[in-house]
Structures are given as structure tokens and as C-alpha cells.
Image (cartoon, rainbow, N blue to C red; front, top):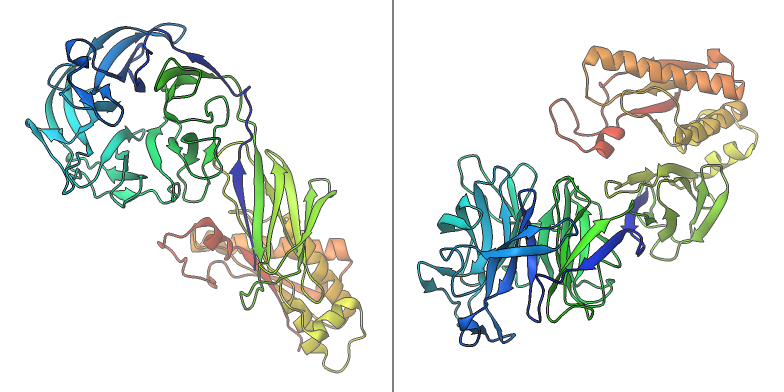
Length: 525
């Protein structure tokens, strides 16, 4: 099998965003963590001001503890007329990073693990961050504050965000010893599930400050290798396979960039950074997305033997554009891996081959968003000597069946799109090989047996498979000049599934694809 996937690497492009440093809300201290409240207000974190600024400081940065403020949003993004959230919320310790439910009646926020006037500490005497829930009485008055059941004095949980229908909460935690992104299910009865690690995006680095946008993209910050500096902002489609992309400059810099948030349904929002152009420590920046996200992608895979699964070194892999022009080629090394840089929103074809092996190909289209996660299977298999001879035109000897059936066996099955019977481009190249064998083996008769996956009714699938079989035969007759009496079209519906994907069994699209096929067999021996 020829394993193939596409990953993402968005190029840095300052034309994707414009940013503005905010004058009103920033100072020499740490200001960050913006969250929209309604249409025209924002809540953010800022150190305490006033009489306690000297005698109540956090030792790690020698700054006052953080409090939550509500501010009005001006047309230019500036945050003005700030007001403190109530004393019930703002304790004498840290508060930051807020998220509201869709109905604006409930709020979740981060705070030092301080509850009912008790500061909880771990065994080493350190206080960690915890998440709290409260009822929203007014923008600055929250009541009935309770800690989340998954808080723990031995580690931090913080930076909460909610998905679009408020059924999941994402947050950052070091419960595993490393800063990772987790989620919990929020049940309809008000209870919460157990924390689940979002392994698709977490690395050996530090992943923090998640924000779930209304389009389903999860934005977060990470200091993993490959970024511009320290913490960089990334975005990921949580589909199980897409790789996070770095937003690039100017959102990211050579310093820490984090707390990215967008207004619902809009192309603007805020993020925080301690870059050198700010007033002091962490500052809040306003951004507008000014264009589509231009990108390039990495098409990569591994060449393996169809029968044994072993990697095949020194195989040739060629990349073509949609016109058939060869763009690039690679002879894979001992690890059998290949990789091509491709443009977004473009059509390509990859072909794998090696001497005395079958050739196989796959067409794919790159995309301009995070939803592309191709899992393309190409087959490359060792050809038996007699099959090689048949394909090369060597005269067929006494063991005609063995040689010709061996040649057919080395040809890949052809596959169909869901609920379709047309011949795809990848299938056409295989049918051309069938034509070649039938011309060299002039006395054989062949059955083209077609199949479906288990979706739809048995009666419908039987008819669909017959259409697929007939389309297969029509191609061979019309494109190869083969006498139609030498090849029969038979549809078997869903009666010969190749895997577990029968009615009612949840399967992936690649698993269903294995069943939507046509196979070939000699019938007159």
C-alpha cells in the first residue's frame, strides 16, 4: 500500500491581518485575555490599581494580582470606560480568561484556587489556577460562584472556552505534567464529563489559551518547535487528522502571542502579546482579518508493499498537475517516505512505481482551509514473472490461465465515489491495464464484478452495483476495442463486503471506500 496524506503549513503573510496596538487599556503592566460580552463590550484582565498596588503583589513578576474589567468597544477597537467586575468575583488573587454561554446567563472564568476564603495549595506549597462557574446578574455582577468538579489543588486548569452549542468546554491544564489542551463534555443535566486530552494538537511543548470560534476552528497558543518565537497562535480543525497551522505575522512575533479571540460572526477581534513594540509587559492588540488565508500544503506519504505491508525503498514517486505535466519526482530512501510542496486549491496526481511492481496513482485536490485531511490509499505490489511477461506482450504459453489471471491479479481493483457509477480518472488507468491483458490473452473471458458499501437498501445497492459493472465493461469495450462478448458485467450489491462495515456499523469513509469496487476474474478456464 502507498500511504499518502496532506498536512498544512501556512505561509507568513502580513496581508492576512492588520493589527493595532491599543492605547487606552494598556500600560507598563500585564493586560490580556479579552472576551466579548454582547455586541459592544469586552472583558479582560489587568492588574489591580490603587492603594493595594504596592502591598499586594504576585512574586513571580512583582506585579499586582490580576482582576477582571468590563470595557466598551469603540469603532476603532479601542477599549474605554472600563469598570471592575464585582468584588464577589475579583478576589485578592488572580482572575482572568472568561467565557459566557450563548444565553449570556452563565459565565466560566479562571482564578487562583481560592474558594470560600481558602487558598488551596499543593504539597509543595504552590497555588494553581482553577475554573469557576457563576450566574450572570448583570455585566459586572456575577453570583453563585462554584468551582468546577475537575479542579485539583495539585495542578492547574484554566483558560476556559466553549464550543458553538455549549456542549463542550475546552481548557488548558498541566495535569499530565505538561501544559496541554483538554475538553470536558457538558451534559444536559448540568454535570460534566471527565477531562479528555486533545491529542490532535498537543505536543511536548506548552499548549495554552484555547479559543473556540463559531466556525469550529480552535485557536490556541503553543511554543512547539517551528514557530516564530515563544508562544505562537495556531488554529486547528478538530477532525482527528488536520495539523494545526501557525497564523504567522503579524499576529505572531518573536515573543509570546496568545489569548486570540474573535467576535462571533465577524472577521476581527483581539489578541495579546509581550512583543517589543508594546508599552510594557503583556499588551492587548486589535486585529482585522483582511483577506483569505493563502497557504501551501505538504503532500507526504510512505510507499509500502500491498501484500506484506513492508516499506519499499527506492520506489519512484512522481507529482503531476491536472494537465498531466510532471512537476516533481522523488526516489524514496530507506524509510520509503516522500513529500511534495503543493499549492492550495489545486488539482494534482501522484504516481508510484518501481521495476517489476504495479504502478498506481491517486488524484487529489488541495484546499484553502483546515478541513482537508486526505487519507489516500495507493497500491503497489510485486508482479509475478508470468504477469510481467503478459503485460509486456510475451506470447502466452500453455499455462495461459495462470499467467493471464496472474496479470489480472496484479491490477488494482477500481473504486467508485459514494452513490456514483462513473469511471474516475484513477480507475481509468487500471482499466487500460485490463484492456492490455485481454489483448495479450486473446482467448480469455472476464467477469467484471461490482460491489457497493452497506449504505442504502439492498435493492438499491444491487441496482447501483450493476450500473457500476456495466460502466466498467462499457469503458473496456469502447476504449480498448475488446469484443463485448468476452466480458460480463455482474453486480453483487452489498453481499460481498471486504470488511466489517455492514448495516448499522459506524465506519470511516476510507473503510466504506474499500467496498465500492469492481474486481476482475477469468471465467472460461
